[in-house]
Image 1 (cartoon, rainbow, N blue to C red):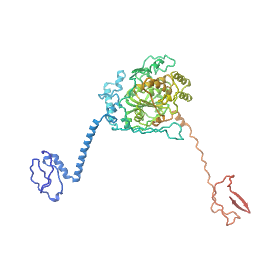
Image 2: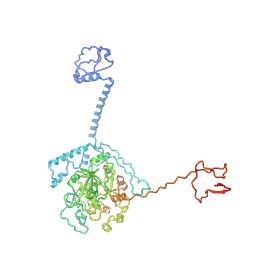
Image 3: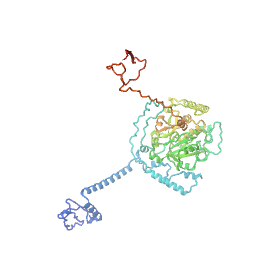
Image 4: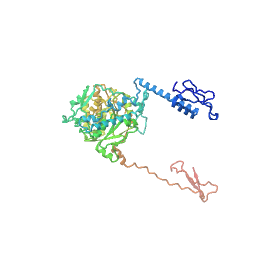
Length: 605
């Protein structure tokens, strides 16, 4: 064959000469001296092989047989690797859709991280929406540059996704729950074991589409400029003064609804509505898509806690927002430096001005219950109170409390109380709110049909939540639930535990939906509770408890070895030992008694 090197055949008197492709054999080359060559060597190449054959022949000439064999093995291994890789790729392309997911490039994960990503590859940013309302003064060039930078950022994140995995069985399917171990030193509420899956497995178990919202498909919110109170117990201007008639209609769930949900004085939450936020902060909040972890500290009431055990992937894809008022911001600046990106650790700090309420705790209910209004592009949210420290990865929490149970709203129940009437009395005893307001709210709910909790309400396990943690998916039915829950907090007391079951049961009677309630000990596994600032500072100011006074005992005087014998004592008598045992009580039967007779001292036991 022309142009192909053939295997050289050894002939008599020659070494390394090759048969030519035209079938003619060249004249044998003169044999080199025997000392100049080694027996048993074969070379490849020839005139018909061109430059590659000559190069390969030169390589073979300069290398030994062992190295040539190693080179051939490497080439064979490379060919085998390419063959296996191509077969795996073709297998993945032909595999049917299932639980296995190519997380690096899958459209499912891409849409989860950025759910409003368009098919053209351009994200829908807040600038587009704000421009429609005349609130964005940036030029189109700046918008396009922001879009390109966001696109590049998402492309960079796509390579950080964990590799695809296949889960035939859930890792926690054989996990059996057992209560916290007995600890005599800690009798109060304690954490209990919880089975989490690794972050990459949680991503593989992530739902590909939003959960179904029963009946309700579209939810809109009321707003107006001339809001007037029509009733004595009316709520607030921030809530829009909903009447009792409007309150009743809000529970008549339809395909499309418009309800009161805070921010009633403006079109955009956070812009001249009360609870006002800077435009730059709003832009960051609107660009947050996928998952947000949010918290708040108002009235300088708590100490900021930094999340722990957060994966690198979550740090890149999950938003962490901390809302502060101006008082808390001033106190934090005295001890902590806030950089140009307005971050303190993982938290992106947002300062809120023109707060709607004089009560700091009531102001905290705005981000707690209305996160879907502050973060319109977010799919999942995790709310934690300012006194709590998150110690688990957000993806693990979503898989454990939402995706694994196929629910859209999860909150822990109270560790001790299950009845709203008992919770109301505990709030009165603890001075959480004035007693008259608590009594008025409970009497109002009783007239609407509120009863004590009993086993007749099963499968509902409690009427009292521990509302410091809320894990939810932002779909219309959960957004409606938190809106109506906020309206109860706005109308009555700020103690949201008292109104939770009323709102839940009213919605549950009309549609097949309810809030899932998990154990309080499970909540204590992924958040650690710290002291409020006032209590912590009081502990630091209080003097340390008095330490027990240590009395140093004087060493006993020991008799020297050469102590002289007492006069008149016989030489053969026993000498009194220099070491003495400890003194016995005088009343003891074994006390030593001495008797002196004839100038001699006898010791009797």
